[in-house]
Length: 497
Ligand code: SF4
Image (tube, rainbow, N blue to C red):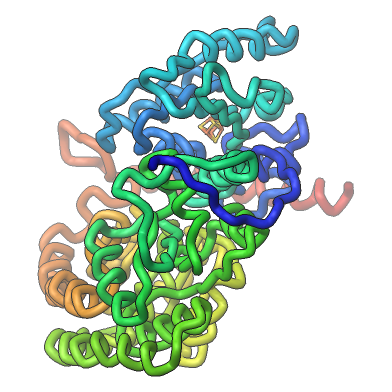
């Protein structure tokens, strides 16, 4: 039996993309100029094109094709990045010019491309992503057919001026797919998961995580008679049904607001935070157990099964030092919790993602321990915190890490070195210490390099020189006077205006 019905409460129709509600035609930018609605990090170009988040979610799903509609330079960058990250799959592209854009022919070209691709033998779904220019021009993807020959068509707008981070763009596509899956469930029985339906009530995990983490979580849930469900974003269409068929949703990454709306409307309770560290795991198991209606003795048994191991791992691998954490992945707060439980002093946590209810418990826990938590953090926020708190280690994005190293502060890339490790349970408790303690021990090496190289290659000596750079102090002072005069003139004009 491969079909089943999932009880679900009716959902109100929603736009295919949250961004559709905020788009105005005169706002298309690459974050290069200001938009009135967007006050996030993409207000200035500090992150990669957000559409990469949606593109990556589509490319990682089985039997799913992705088509981009946007400027050729944007598409070049996005396909380059997706192949850099091992997409191993073609990305579709519908090009346009001024004429096809303004006459509406672009929409017809997209529709033709979708029809040409819609082969039910090889595809479950086709995702069409409007980038900045087609979104701003109002190319109406919602007018595409819902399905062609049984292949589902998902059209979303993911412009840089409406979706501040690529993390949130993952939510845009995931939520659109969940919405679609809800309508299918409401229409009748749907396909069961490939490995069959779980006999136990399940917990759906929201947010991409290290591959071992769902297995660790499954072991934590077992004493409560619960099983781990799919991770959203899913890797296959039919997993969307299983995700909706859960008892509880664990919002491990708290920025999936679109997905949370779908789960809420379907009547599924949502629990924030994550099973990280001793306190984090204890309160997470308690919350999940209660939300799933598990008896208190089973909740206590689940805690007892894992907490001693976590306490032992934390004691075995302590972290000593002042650490600053920032990133755009959405897991920054739980990483900071784990660091503090490992013994570190965390001074500041910056996340490019927005403040949500699902992150409230982690924020309160951190603030109670004196941590400054900054949502929608910009590069300037992160650098100002670094200069204010003088941490022993900075965990951050590429420009933050670069600035820290220039200041002789050891630094680690969040994406490559922190997200690529388990965080949950006892495995997570010991996983960060090795890399973090090794990095903090590197400070003397930075200082000896700094004293060896001195000011070489700094400021106006940067670049490749065939001869030793010559100083021209008279030219510098002439330029300084010129700049001062220009600034004074600007100021006078502003006051006169
Ligand atoms: S789609 Fe928009 S945000 Fe992305 S690269 Fe192009 S202009 Fe920039």
